[in-house]
Image (cartoon, rainbow, N blue to C red; front, side, top):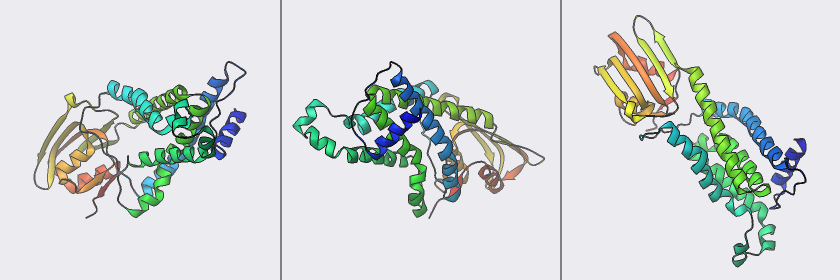
Length: 287
């Protein structure tokens, strides 16, 4: 394992398009799973840094209005998205015969390092657009937000060059499956995210990893400044906040949520927002 990681580090410092020459039948599988475990280790290191960024300067994501049924979403994330991204960002990392009409192999190898570095940089930059934040500090801390993607860029490039395109595509798909399984487990363990039951209010909020629009429900009984009932199923939190507090007044790190809230005497909307903000990232929109 150590030799494989040393080989990977050498690739980062001095990229080359040489395919791995093997003398044992299990070499490819050892390289494949060593890099997978390396990614798990890096994820464990980077996640706290990303939480630090979220604390210093919150970033926001938006959920789709469309149906994100679990099976379709997983097929897309595990099969099609990795295939497209591998083709866009890493297909060119291996010299093909028809390239000779555009560039010689010697010239290709001379500038190969910059081809790899450019591929990794563009891959990380593309993932930065998953977040929303207009503050200058966001662009300073952006490298931390996509640091795991930059590492991924080198890992997938290494696998693509040394083992082949199918291996990098497969690793990407398995990694996405691992991440979604991990996220799903965390969500199950954390639910209900908010649970408050007292004389003034009964409130429970659960988060869903996916959305099924056939199950959506939005019912509210309110006055101008108070809520008596709020029943929400399978809605993005951002839409709930927009509906109650006015469109585009707040930025939200979006989640699919279910809310069960009732208050016999009415509960202040501002007080409810404070309760929700204890468990979700919600900030006023910049004017």
